[in-house]
Length: 66
Image (cartoon, rainbow, N blue to C red; front, top):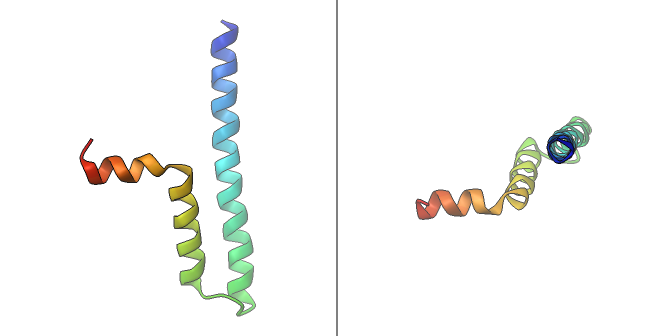
């Protein structure tokens, strides 16, 4: 029973970290767009690139048809 509790706790923590990271990128990127330091396309490209670093096999498996 303890291993399942550990598994789901780690899953919750990892998901929370990913959501917090994306929220932070959106807030900081939004502030940079608001102060005219960055275009909105730069924020979108950065968030997309970071998401691909998190899950590199998702894109590869889609391309390869696995």
